[in-house]
Amino acid sequence: MKNFEKLDLQMKAYQQELVENVFLNYQQTIKIATNLGIDFTNSKERILREINENDKISFNDRYNEFLSFQGMMDIFNSNKSILKNPEIVRMQVIAQNYISFTYFNEIIYHSVEKFMQNDSVAKKCINFITTGRVRLFRNAFSHGNWKYKSDYSGLIFYARENKHDTSLKEFHLEDFELGFWQSLSRTINYTLLETIKH
Image 1 (cartoon, rainbow, N blue to C red):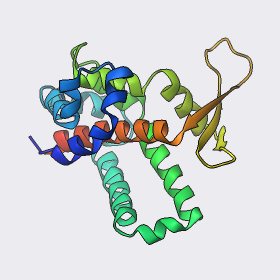
Image 2: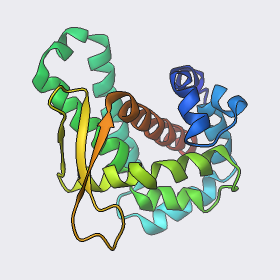
Image 3: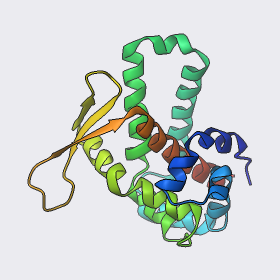
Image 4: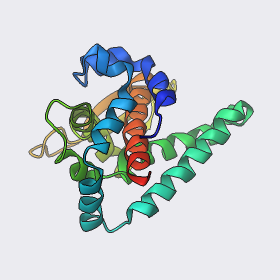
């Protein structure tokens, strides 16, 4: 199995959120990417078969798009002066949200989730990233119903809280919370793709 220690370290910044919101125990949060990799490894052939049968976009195409996105993020992270340009930062936010919440869609997550045990790290993480406020944000983002807060400390998005709502409700999303959602989503996606690919 591929080594995910770097991702494990990056996700330590969100240990409290992983315990309180994703319902992982503290030990699971210490090596969250490694634990995801173990969960995915145990069912990788079945997951790949399920994805290939249900997704119009091939696994390799999704893998290559994610690598391209990671390459863009690496360029940004190695050249901080680029991020002094507000237009670049805004483009980065859009790309991050698209990859994190839209490009890896429910077909992928449901193809994986059905093979995960109920108490597994993968099942809990996928459940979090596909339900509740994260799902509301995904829907709002996909339909263009979002904007920056006036002080740029986060985003405002508009979504129907349940299917019976006739109008959109306003929600506020702080930068830290969005960063957590993005990081968890990318951790799931990266460990899944790398585990299946190798």
